[in-house]
Amino acid sequence: MSASACLTLAGISFLIWFRDRKAWAYVFFSLLAIGAAAFAWCELRMMRAETPAEFATVLKWGHVAVWVIVVSLIGFVRIYLNAGRPWLAWTVCGLRTLALVLNFLVGQNLNYLEIASIRHVSLLGETVHVAKGVPNRWMLVGQAALVFLLIFVADATVTAWRRGDRHRARAVGGSAVFFMLFSCFQAVFVLWGIVEVPIVASISVMGLVVAMGYELGNDTIRASLLSRQLQESEAGLREIEERMRLVVESVDFGIWIRDLARNDVWATEKWRRLFGFNETEKLEFDLIVQRLHPDDRDAFRSIVERAAAGDGSYETEYRILLPSGETRWISSHGRVEFGGDRKPILLRAVSHEITARKEADLEAQNLRREIAHAGRVSLMGQLASALAHEINQPLGAILRNAEAAELFLQDPSPDLDEVRAILADIRKDDERAGNVIGRMRGLLKRQELDKRPVNVGELVGEVVALVRSDAAVRHVRLDVAVGDNLPHLPGDLVALQQVLLNLIVNGMDAIDETNQGDRRVSVTAALDGTNTVEIAVSDSGPGIPADKLAFIFDPFFTTKANGMGMGLPISRNIIEAHHGRLWAENNKDGGASFRFTLPVAEEGVRK
Image (cartoon, rainbow, N blue to C red; front, side, top):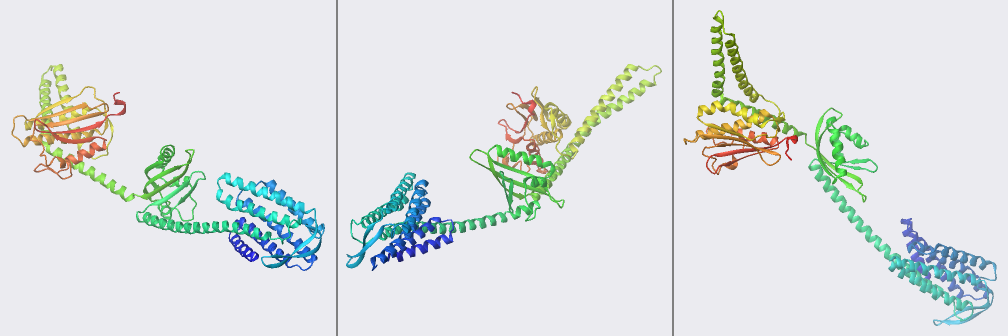
């Protein structure tokens, strides 16, 4: 029964090792179980031996099984417990091998020089045979090997226990020491003739095999459970990957990952198509950067480097040039992963095409410029009569001065000093008319923002000069208060003039809606804080109805009977393009105020 059980366990363990060639503990256990089965068979044969010679022969071959048991037990303990002193292991193997050699060279076997007779004893109600003979002193070598084996196993058990692997130390090491002590004492008492009972060491070895097999079985069960859990996890991961792939494809995203240590780049199929790479083409970071527009390459490298040196995340937009010559706009968001020493090790990023959005933004910008141009033309149309009056004044003065000069020159001795004074007046009036026409042409031009340092006094003064004639016709007083030594503003002079002109004309339009005696528009400019200038246009009109105050900057919303509803939205867009803010409020004493703030140029910031 012991032999059958051991062979069964040996076959199972061998099959496990055959499936997993790295599981060497199962190999040594299988050899141990085979050795135990062989020794059990030898014990049974000795119990049934009819002659001393037969008993001696079976016992001689039994030492081969013992050698297999000892060597395989050492290998199992070393691998399974990952402990045990190597010199002890080699000492045990050397002594046991020496004992096996002496077993075939000295006497009838290692234990007896000569077996004189066979005696019959009773065991469990059955008659069995035991040997009676002269003990072989060389069996001390084999017994010394058993003593060192006990020391080796005990040392490995203590090491595993101290390491924290107490379950294995108790189950394998403890059971090995217990059963080995039992079998050793039983074999010594029998072989030295102290007791007359058959050798039954296989029973204790069987106990050792069962204990070790139980632990290996638990490991196999745990491995099976882990394998099942791993399969379930892999299935879950595959499901998550499929869902992520579906999400990524549905939102038209491409993903790429760069291993910074090895400079390897992996990318999804969508990303490769987006950047014009085929499925088999090897990706490198420098090759990817070469696909970027030349004007965007340095900026992209700089953004990635700042992310690696900072919090690890970045977001940017850039253009790529495909081999076909097509240009695409790409939006990219990435994150850098750092190692334990804060060294960047991985870069993950998602990219998607925004060419359509960029083209739509460009069209919207062009449309805003067209609308702004139309607004300027419309505004200038409203000022046409006043501007014509302002231009007619210097033209009329020029005409009168020219007629006077002609009369002076008809005199035989003309007063040249007077003629020079007349010519100076003509030049002055001409410059005045030219300035008026220049301001009109600037406002009527359709162009991009040209940001340059703007003097606030000149900005306000030129616009006020442009509308002063119209204000006089409407009987509106213009009050101007510009702070001294205001810093320059980085901006487009013509665009800012358009905003201020629109606000002043709106104020005069609001005053036209009331018949009150105080008809006044105030323009003020002052420093707001340390790095912002506030310009305000206030009127004495009826104010803005409270229910309409929140909508006056909406496109096509107007409170005028003939208004387009585009002046204020355009003005707000212009101010926001200058990184400023435009808002409206009603005055406590009546009327309304429109205010906008603009950041000053860095060199003009006051400390």
